[in-house]
Amino acid sequence: MRTKPSALAPFFRSDAQGKILAAILLSSQPEQSLTTVARDAGVPLTTVLREVDRLQAAGVVTTRKLGQARLVAPDDAYPLAAPLTQIVAATYGPLPVVEDAFARLDGVEHVVVFGSWAARAAGAPGRFPGDVDVLVIGRVNQLDAIERGIDAGERIGREVNVTVVTPERWQAGDDGFVADIQSKPYLEIGTSRP
Image (cartoon, rainbow, N blue to C red; front, side):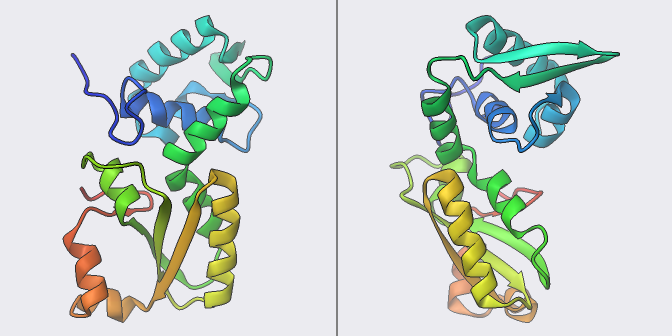
């Protein structure tokens, strides 16, 4: 089956390839199982196996067996490791990095990525986004949310703009700002809505 190139990073063969690279290169774990990569990337295990074989053959990653599991890790000796990681962080990093940044913020009910980055991730054509827009839904300290956005931005090499709204404002949807977000592609952390 032929897949179309990524709208976020058209130099990748597919979004699956970009998501797999993000799961491997941006992980806080030094190595992880292929099953974990498949889960984190939201990609079938068979696709992960095929892509990891290609990446290993090119020297981008290393693998080893541990019991029944096959573990994968970035190969720091790969000459393009740093620039590749930077590209992956800017293109496929926002979702996992934003999820990680806001996971333990008190009072968060939902986190939504919207705007041009979400539109590209949903396949809409256009120029590469200059920033990532994040909507935090809940009763949170706005300063804490903004600080987490700054930290996430440093990790992905893109400015992360954070807006906080109450759950009631998000649910009502009658506010112009919220209605605009809900009428366009957005990605809720952990799920997607094209």
